[in-house]
Amino acid sequence: MYEDKTLICKECGKEFVFTAGEQEFYAEKGFVNEPQRCKDCRQARKNAARSAREFHETTCADCGGVAKIPFKPMEGKDYYCSDCFAKRKAAEEAEEETE
Image (tube, rainbow, N blue to C red; front, side):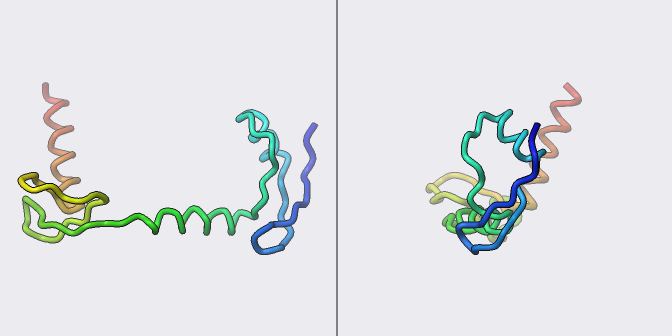
């Protein structure tokens, strides 16, 4: 049914294999175009889009440390660093299980 195809990456110009399994996956998802970039270039492109995100620093309401958030903080709201946020979330989930 499907056979491996060798394609040329439009980003780096290297050859890469579009496997039969990948072709089947693309067909199941309804994708009609073949990939134009190799796996490494696709990953680099995704990472570049993620790193463009702007973070703002504020003070953690629990520990007083630095909390980095992906939006501008509003006056009068509590924000938490990653560690304190995870602890609060775990405590909430534990509380829901006991109810």
